[in-house]
Amino acid sequence: MIDEYENYKMNKVGKSDEGEFVVPKRQLVEIHSDSIFHVHTKRCKHAGTDTDEAYVKRAVELGAKAIVFTDHAPFPGNPFGNRMDYEDLPEYISSLKRIKEMYRDQINVQIGLEIEFFPSYLAYYKELQSNRDIEWLVLGQHMFEHSPRVYSFSDSEEELRETEYIGLIEAMMEGLKTGLFSVVAHPDRAFRRRELWDEHMTEMSKKLINTVLENNLILEDNISSYRSENQHWDEFWQILDGILASDETKTAMVTKGIDAHSVKELDYYIGRFDHD
Image 1 (cartoon, rainbow, N blue to C red):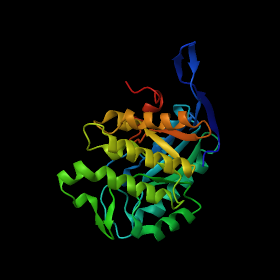
Image 2: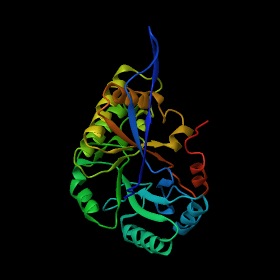
Image 3: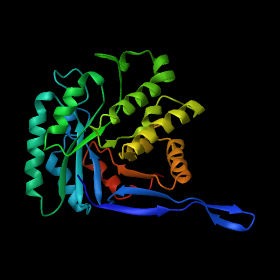
Image 4: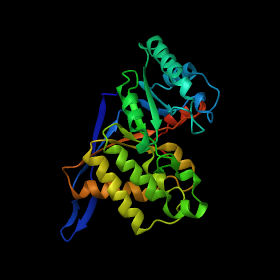
């Protein structure tokens, strides 16, 4: 895992009868800004055809100190699409281990997986976490499990619009409490089917954020979400800010994730704090 962190404090300025004052400090801890986090490969079947080494070469050209691969993890039996096949997992790991060694003097190549939490696969997550070659297990909740092997992608469009975010957030919270995951990918994307922010979305956001803080986990502010309608929500991140501002003892670990599906998309790294 990346063990170098950039700490910085952000102050909110307000007004009182006596003039300007600073309200409680909040501290954000960011995975080092010279790292490229959240990279997919051609194995997931919805990315480009670039080789693993091509990603690493471009990352070196961009001046990155580390690149973290987090391709969509397979499941035994390959029950889901848009991810690598279960049979490809050993080759994914061996390829990245080889490149890690090749480029060890230029960049820190790290091996991870992005995966949903389904309660019926608990033993599988433990197996992945016990694999010493897998350095990151990232929770990316794109769907959820109603009951064993019954998933939300079978829900009607109306059900998904109204209640998908509830199921996604509840699944994330359940998964995070297992201690098996280190990062929550694009948490605000849970609201992707919503059009207007409401109070219940606020309450669900607070529950998720507090679960993350209580378990000392990392939230990912996903850059690709800014480029898609209703996938990035300022309201979610404002709620995080409000929780931190109300309790100066709390610290949030936040990373910017590129969510690259091609080498070209690594170039978002250059301006990854700018979303206009």
